[in-house]
Amino acid sequence: MSPIDWRRDGAVAIVVMQKDDNTMNIDFVDGMFDVLDAILEDKDMTAVVITSGNKKNWSIGLDMNWLGTLIAENDVALLKRFMLRIDDMFKKILLYPLPVIAAINGHAFGSGAILSCACDFRFMKADKGYFCFPEIDLGIPFMPGQLAFCQKAIPVQKFQELLLTGKRAGAKELEACQAILKACADEAELFQEAIGFARSLHKKRGIFGEMKKRHNQPMVTKLENEDSKYIDSMAVLISD
Image (tube, rainbow, N blue to C red; front, side, top):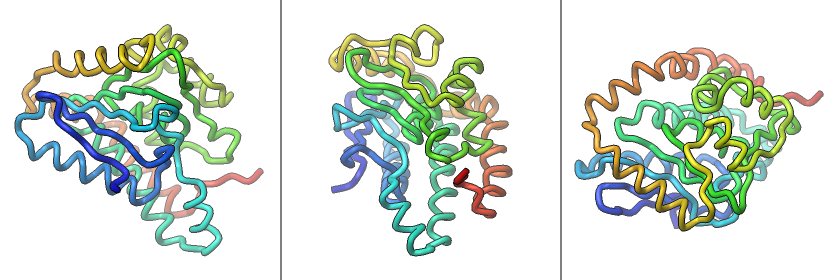
């Protein structure tokens, strides 16, 4: 089974992450590219909603077991390719010519939380699930490009708090600081609100894509020019 699939809901493409806890490895990232490319080929699609088939977890970040195997086997080439590829996934969403909405129906941790920040808009259910950047406790520093686009999603003071403490934030807290558009009571309301909002964004691809490009280009430039320096030098883990 593919780690990611999609279906049509009228003119809205519903992207479903369906890999256990939706941890990210090279297959997950390649699957996201395949799905986003397929959606663009369907000219009837006007918006994208990304959600999880796992009601507990939206995405809990990197596949640490898979990464641990790469490190144990000293497969530096694949590790570097993966780190560059995951940045390419974020760039793909930042420049995607359709509105991309995260319908966060479970925990969003680490790279899962970062993925939601790459999206244009976020909704989250309030009854279950936390949003968290645990990298501070895992010894995994953010890349410059990731820092940049997370700050377009989360107000800078709140982002600094989440980044440097590793605390877990619920939907109500994120709604209060406008990191998400709405904290929804439950999953039913989450999908109603997120898909309803997606349907309201019936914009032409050309202007929407160009607007995102001009708005997000400084972040994309950091992804392209600065992150690669850290990846090439393998400065991706801090042990002390």
